[in-house]
Length: 208
Length: 248
Image (cartoon, rainbow over all chains, first blue to last red; front, side, top):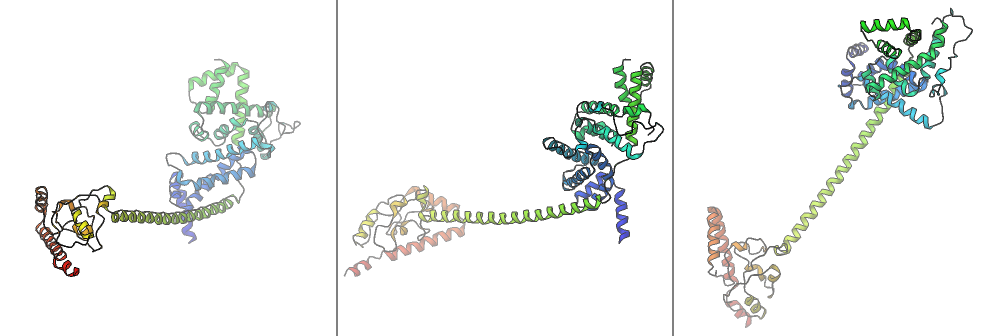
């Protein structure tokens, strides 16, 4: 019985996202499990880069998958499943950002970058550190997080979709609902902002 | 090439532009402009760091938590669907009951209107009888009633004015349905007076002729038999001997 189940799952894994979604629409729950396994890490990484808090990112991700499952009937195969899922997740983040901008700040780490903050040098790495001393993973993680955090909210989403999730400009436009030209300019501004944050470390020649 | 154009081109190359001519022009500019060269180096390095950064993953029990949540949602949506179906069913029952009640009311109203007579619905009915007869009967004159010119009126004018002999206006409405007034087809039938005679009426004769022509043989037989029966009834009712014996 277990062998049969494993065989079924293996067969499902061979299907495309869109084929799996068609099966989900017909009430096949196991197909959705395969989609969750396929996207949970990618989506979490995207959400974590956006909100900067593990618990919150996980909460939003769960919400996104639940919404995708409940509204599976609304999904049409003309759109890519990944685009559809990212759109759901992005809208959830937007809603939270909107409500957070009205409410007191609960998560200071990922609050909106202040004006001119990106000009301030990054202080995660010890200034007396020798360039030869290699930066470890957790330090790199913090540097990257700080670099992304300092990108203004309205540029951050497009930037993460492009540089972290490697979506095409067209897909980003579909997810964010922005025009292609706007997406392009926002990504370039965000790249420049990110570069400025990391510039002192790069100039110092610290080995990553 | 100016710095502005070079930077624009730089971003295009980051997005995978493959143009050898433009690449050569950009490289030449970067070789001449140290600011642009620094910017290009920092940009490439920072993005490289971002791409090399370890991917963040959700907690190990994320899948289980999600599965539990999905089950909860599934159950609650099923419960919701069941309650919606139940509501729909009860609503359907209520709707059906209301529809039946409304239909019954319409039927009853129609029946009442029908019983009240066609005249009240604006349809004129021909009354075939004599006002003289009514007066005579009321006065107790039960002698044979002479044929006289029939009168025509609405149903209000047709109320029995004579003694309750069980006849009244009903007996004079025509030949087809003696006991069922208001059938609406009396005008098309020959008039039979109280004495059972049918006055000459060319218009009526031709109508009856046309009606008979349109009938099948069976219908004609049925029609004529009915008329004979009615005529016999008339003759029995108006036997001149009975009132005389009562008087004595």
